Image (cartoon, rainbow, N blue to C red; front, side):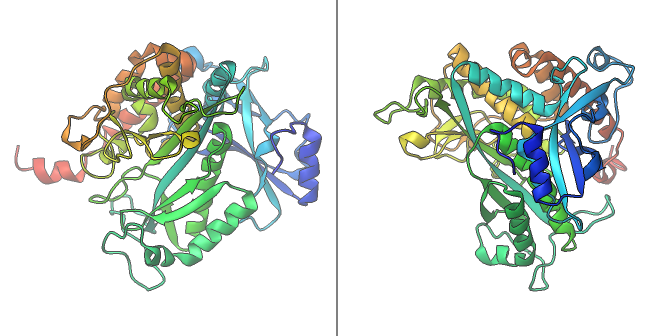
Length: 455
């Protein structure tokens, strides 16, 4: 991997030559987090090639549909204009499962005038990081990403179930933190760790989570953009490894009824660029006003950001009372019943954990949104509510209960749109409305079971 200190194309070419690369995957993360782009022979990947994609490629939903009319086309040109793609050399990595020496490089999207396309997810996160930079702050994040391993399932009408492990049996009970349950899938995880090592992904610990077949991978703390890249690439990696072991890996927020959902908890702190100190702690170890303001910003804006943290109709099935997922915007120290947790840590490691975000969220969008909430809190000196020291599940729901409700809140929140970008919020909400309308055409088994002959 080329370091972020070297952004000239010649260094990238030298890396490709050293690794004898013959093919290159040119990747662009779209709104969903899907890898879009083109695959090129090595000799065609040149600095002056000027690779392009239609701008709507990064502005469509999980169904691949686009709005037919409306505010979407105040941002996206009806003439299907091109974006100009530029590789970020710091993202180049080997594709470890490819049969021929293949590299993958994440690209940024620019318009014809050389400006970042404002609705591309990577652009949104870059912009939010720039706002912190202008204040002399450096955000530091560490995601914890949950996912399920499930048996191969090619029929969407058939419920998912845990895969068969080395013992020849599927899990039938919850095995939280079980080492033996993880070892059931040793061959798969040996491949995952080998792939991650070859790709220089910043992964830390692997644990078995509460659900049957549910795992969690933790990432070391680092700069938000680099870690969003790593989460994006890690999802590709786990899916690929699972397929090679005759199973699926899914980051759906709630893939299996009756089992806990999957989250992407994000730990976040802010370092002063001038002093190198964590601005959430005084020198005597006590929390600063910035620490409380950051929490206040999360409390104020998380409800409006839920369409970004919980982007699908399925996402809201995860957010249920007393099931390892928050229903509130309370905050507390070492309290896993709240939506905003402050883990026990020494002064230099004081941080805030956003537990609301689902594993199905786009990592670029989720990181941009949670940092935007905290930024607004510090900028506007938003005081948090009193700390919750009991069971927050005993309180009321404080989050939207559906994607439709969440989209309405996001549209009405002008402060958040000002930080994330009006163009992005417009494109995002319009695309999500298309997805929501598509879902509402589907009649579920529950409706047939309970309504067919009873209403």
